[in-house]
Image (tube, rainbow, N blue to C red; front, top):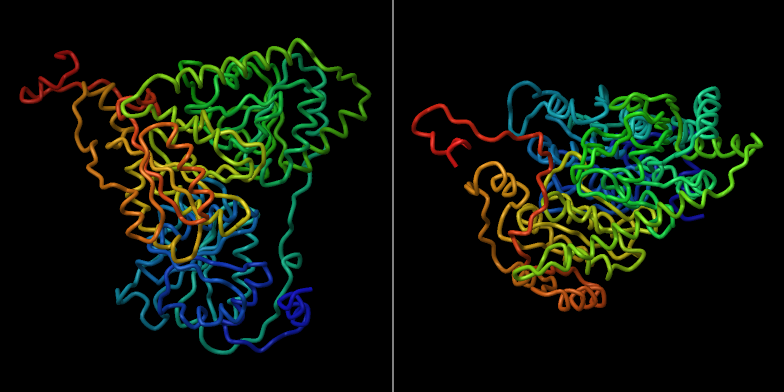
Length: 589
């Protein structure tokens, strides 16, 4: 038993006299928190002073947005809620984008948000902001500390809600409440929250079993919930019993091992055609741990693949997600592991025969082989200087099996959805449906902090890279060997593609004049490599892995080889009514 655990065992069950700062730190320790992220500030300095002695490492970033992206990634890799903190006012509001991203990603997180002191609230003093109002719609809850004696109780509530609701919770505390004297207990998490919700309604499980027994063409979508619940092995067992193809939900390519013969890849934008063709004729669709988001189930490649007549069985731990986007035949409010295990058990106990459907398995294999070849063929189309798809293909081939990859948003980053394959869970960290730039690099740093044994890569375009390259200094300072693969095509190419398709190649604000990112990285103390061909790219990755240092690989790719728009239905061909703009009307092209 380590020292911290011994101390915690002595303290539990005994009311202690503490300062509020001590009560907060001890509650964090009880939750197993050993690191947190942010930028130091006077508002919480009394608590900050305790962290080294407590054994909690404070990771200072260059911008607070990065802090919450790091915490988001830390949680996705470990399953443990990340913790961020910032100075009242601007320090906390700098996290708005990354907390909103974590909220959309269903990532448990504690945002410690000091407010102005109680004596000055409402005077619009220095760095005052009503943070609770700012964060109201992008967190699962705000827990306000109403008195210094409540600091530990309120923090326990914040953790309970973060895990139960699967998202960030704002812990809002006046900056003067860190000081004083309180008496309180330090409790074990099991004393104030539950880890799992079980398998849900037994009758719903029976209905799901009956549907699966009768299904002729069952299919499975495995999502983030299956990863969080460590249910992947059960999903494999169920898929094999049903001879069902398994797709993964949008940008959760690690939710089922790609090397499994029944894995067909991701759905959603720039996903797998094999997944789409495998799903469209399903008569029963089992969705495990996924909310079946609207964006993640839209037609792609002109394939309207989401089955229209399938009977959907949806398993989700959050009641808000059941049938939110697609009508279901059976909704199961339960833990992905427990619900899948119970379905498997009842299928086995039913006495039904589940012989392998060789014809179906051959069809799955054929779709998979066809798609994999298409990806290679698309990548081998020459580019000037390099086809971005070729770069993605070579990166995926060079990745160690245990690598974690964080992908940003943008034309090439989103195309990576088609190319990235994973055989282990908790390895794919994507910007997901909030879709903000600047996610991938700090997420990769968070992944290294969560699991130093796994190499961490980020895939990011040159536009998004401008929003996060300052954190190379953090990686150097903290000795985090993140490998940044920067796709340098000289433009905001996701939006540029819209101007190609809808605005007759009139480019406004699309082009970027950037520096040599490899040289910039070197000036910041990192390794930097610039490449413009596939052979050098593979060597660069090998060099970066061997160096065990933060490395930026500046990859020069063709800016004219672009993926289709994110949503063809989101824009319309331009119509102009004033005479001075008539030449811009699509009818006059």
